[in-house]
Image 1 (tube, rainbow, N blue to C red):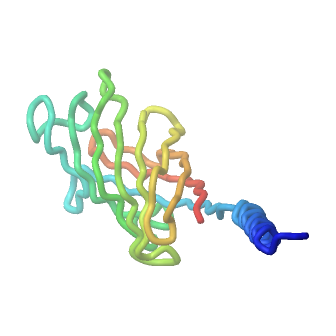
Image 2: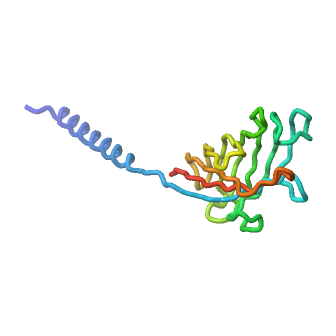
Image 3: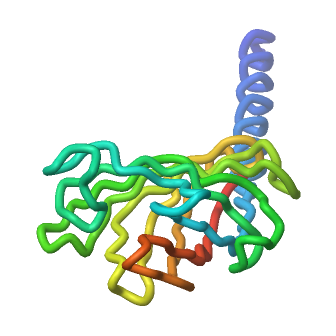
Length: 180
């Protein structure tokens, strides 16, 4: 004679396992989106419209960013194209620290905050080494907000323009992102 409790338990066990299997196969099929972006950061340490300033270093706030140990704060325009007059899509806000003894390498950490376009209100958190004497440098994208929640990625930075005498540069950032 069959025990009704045994039949109920078996049915519950079967439905429970079926639910777990369904969830495991359904949730594992969520694939992250990939987004590729190219934008330009305009870094100006001098002039009427300077966007970067040194705040500390071996000789104090008047230190040159090209000297080891100097810290600079930036609020640089981010545009769609290499020309400063191209469409403004956001700001790059953060800091550079000259962390290479010969002065040719910066540690950078900044937020790209999008203020217009498809990603308005979203941001990317970028950090890594910027050995600016190299043609291409790779950096990490470690976080994001808005459209870029749960982002991970990397970017390639190229110097489009650099004037060492006036400490002005235009940087091309080609970013590849994975996010949900």
